[in-house]
Structures are given as structure tokens and as C-alpha cells.
Length: 365
Image 1 (cartoon, helix red, strand yellow):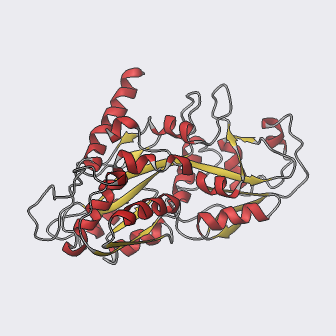
Image 2 (cartoon, rainbow, N blue to C red):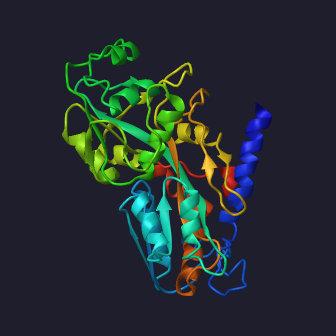
Image 3 (spheres, rainbow, N blue to C red):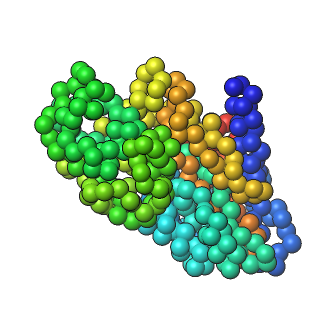
């Protein structure tokens, strides 16, 4: 078991060094495989080395929007000649925009599909293609609003039935069994899901399918496939609905629960104690991930069925998606400079207070 864990961490570390060293992104017609904007000299706050000028457009994951806001603020405070504009319409929309050549990179909570990699070859010139660069991980919180219930425990099968409209009331017998001491009200469950294509949805449904295949019959996808429920746009939209509606339950990145002071579910994973959604517990689960991408592609496969003590398996890893070569020359330098900062120890450490799980120390180093 220890050997397997070491091999997983080693695989992650080898891959992530390609991210946090000098990002090997190249421009159209460029023979430079390393560029001039590697980790470089640590100057000014946050070890940022400015390269490139002008506007850098990016879009995608709403789950990483709070992280991106901090990164952009820190970077722009040092690099006055670069304006970074990150929009958060969701992972699906961000990937579509990137594949249309409208942005320098995309943010996604799930790696590219093979057909998307194939499409990227039209945008990434000189034989290049899009690659997945993991930048930050974190727990997907299950936020709920049930008056009088402060410590709610659910497991994967129960969650699957709630989000598929099989369990529709908070005093259902299956919920009572998991919460024998709670005063569960006779209250209708209002389950909210994303209306837009979402990497967070993809990760939630991968967890439900992996940990409760008998209860969740749908295939994992960015587009919601569960029965019934109500929809809202973006992680912020889901968090707002939970906060406003008694009986509501939904899923979003932990920082939205923290900011909105929304109660979150503890997961019964089969470990001795139910596991809380927090940064450290998510990191324990992410440490069990395996690298499944090839070469410079650092896509990871998470272990959704871990029973390790204190490991919170409902996690996501946010990727930045860029061309390995064939990037647009006018945005290449700034893209490499910015992503090198986000992958650095300084960039990662800026996120923990927001409820994100930084890439493990072994990888950053």
C-alpha cells in the first residue's frame, strides 16, 4: 500500500514539474521549447516574472473563479503592462471558446475528451495540441439549508437518490438512518443543479457513478442528466439558491460555501468517522490520484471510493488548458509568465485561505 502511494505521488510530481518549472508552451513557428519565462528570478512579491504585454483573454470554470481572481490581482499588481480578463461561463463554454481560438487558455474542472484534443489541433498550429495542466484542487462541497440541522451526514447512494429525485423529503428513512440524532423536519427537498455545462457537474457525477453505481444510473458528463430538480447558472448561482431556499441542497466549490456561510454535508465513506469537506481532507484524497495523461498532458484520475481516514473523495482538480506548441505569438509570453506564477509555491499558497487545496508540496517543489 505504501509503495502504491509513493508511486502515485511520484507520478504526480514528475508530471507537475513540467508545470511548475518552465512551462513548455511554444508559439507558432517557434523553436524555443523552454521560453524565457520559467520560474526564473524571484523578484517582487509572489515570485512573478513579467513577460509580454497587452490583453490576455481566458474563460471557463466558475469553480476556480475565486482562485483566478486572486491570481489575476496579484499578477496584475506587478505586471502593469498585462491585462488579464478571465470570464467564468463554465468549463464547457470555456473549452468551446478556446477551441474556437478566441482565448489564450481555458479553465476546466475536468480534462479534455479525446475528441476535444483532436479539435484543438486546428487551433494549436505547428503540430501542437491542447494539454491539461492541473493547477489547484479542492473539495466539492454539498451545501444544504435545513432549519435546525447543523451536522448532516450523507453517503454516496443517498446523495445519488436525492439528486435523482428518488428521495424527496428531509425526514426520509435513509437520511434518518445516517443521522439518528438529528431533528429532521418534514420538509420537501429542493435539489439544485447547474443549468450550464460544468466541470463541477462532471466531477460530482463521476463521484456518484464511481461510489454509488447502483443508485446513479447516468453516465458522468458536464451536462446534467439527473431527473427532476431545479437549475441555476454557475457555482455562485447554486450557492445563492441554497442560501435563499429552506430545504435546498446543491454542490459547489468550497469557497462558495465559506463565503456564503452555508452548512456543508459530511460524507460517510466507510471510514470510522464521517469526513468533512475541507482543504486538508481533500488533499488526502487527491494524493491518491493517478496521472493518466501522456507526455506533457497531466490529466489525473481521482479515487472516488477511498475509505482512508480523513480523506474527502468528492474533489475536483482544476486544469488550465493551453497548446503545448503552436500558441499565438502575441499572447505566448504572457500566458507562460502567468501560468508559471499560478503553479509556483507562491501562487499555490495564496489559495488555501479561500478553501482550495494547493497542489501537494512534493509536486510544487
